[in-house]
Length: 206
Image (cartoon, rainbow, N blue to C red; front, side, top):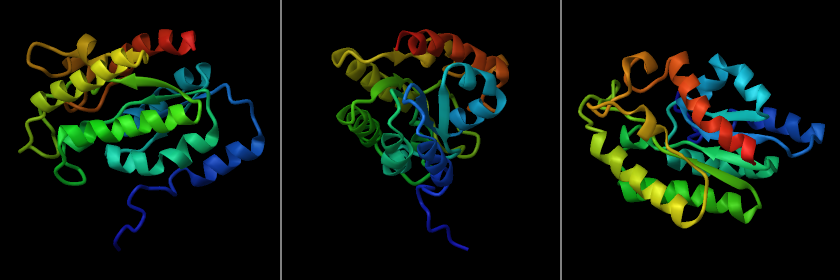
């Protein structure tokens, strides 16, 4: 049966409604992303709980899908901040070919939508990847570097916190260290702990 919920708007709809009905203070942070974010919460739930971080990651998603659900899964929750980590599935062409310029545009649209609603933004680099295990014809290296350069420049010019996972985690072969990854893209617990070391100080400074 064909999936008619292209952006997976139903994935968090009921959870969002329950959260809003609790009328909790908006001192939490939303993690918007793909499988990196979704699996992070699954294997490192304590990090999310201890840092008032709630997960709105969906595996396989591209920035186009995230942008479509950004109002529902971020803005309407009224968090104090959002962590945006997106791009690898676009480069993998999960929803078809897309230029780096358009990936960047989708991510910046999320940034601007958050800021228009008085939500602070933490922008993140795409993680290193030398291959895409589910789409072997793709060479992601140059596109990841290009996208990260655009994102880091935007963050600097607009004085946004930028978490540069790429710079700290990349190897000489433009991949993740073997200790940090299961398949070249998805992370081990050690990989997530490395990310936490970089993100934690930014969350604390909010």
